[in-house]
Image 1 (cartoon, rainbow, N blue to C red):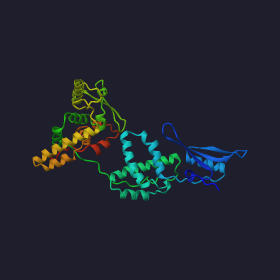
Image 2 (image 1 turned 90 degrees about the vertical axis):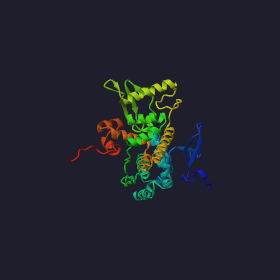
Image 3 (image 1 turned 180 degrees about the vertical axis):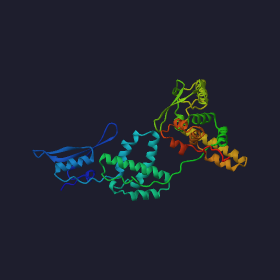
Image 4 (image 1 turned 60 degrees about the vertical axis):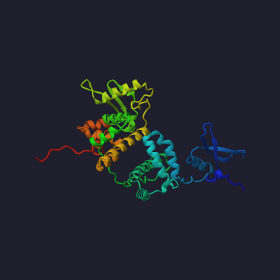
Length: 355
């Protein structure tokens, strides 16, 4: 009696798996039917490289019913990471990979059709990071939708309709006292980044990626990394340079004086491009010095408010201090001004008193 090799024991009778290492280093996997030709000579009939399709072809050749395919979620996670995530924006890719790590720990060994809404709700309730749990459930929902498209599952999406944890939008507002306290302690490149972020209303990553070549024809051209939204921000008003235009002129002059070779606007005094990690360290240092100064003056309330200040709060600060909501929404690149109003406007509406 012949026994199947260990590498094929998970396959139906007379189905073989062949694995080859390509020159690129990647592994190629193919499936074959161990059959006979009309002369009784053994032959291997190709069944393809997809296991599910190969089993269907095997059933035709072996005159057996097509075996029920049980696919583990871990396999679907791998395919999603390989085929779907690379097509997303870099920040979204990073967030998806973090969520996928948590989902793998909980669901990788589970059959895809065994997950129910109740199981997902239990996962939601056990997660300590409530906001992160919402992101993970949203990703799991999209993975199930893709699995249905791929034909891996015919089951209804179990994540659809599962209640999310309640989220409160961040409402911190960096008023003039907080802004000035940190700005005074900032090194020159941090001040430049703060000014550019405030005057353009853009996200930190977009601010750091702005280049000298983006300043064309009296506009600063912006392509937002998160949404791919394209903007042209005016550098002059009534034929005179506005504050953003004056800042850009100064940054371009700095590049010329320092003989900078890299293309970016935000640079250090020795001409290096300021990266996200460099910006974070410089901002943390400036904020810590500002906190110490506030504590020296025995102003614990101000110190605590400064401690809450993050660089990402500059974008909502800009949105809050623009009087016209439509103007603020367009500058931030929002298609729906309700997002600007509910999430980014963090100071109260100006109203008249009773008398």
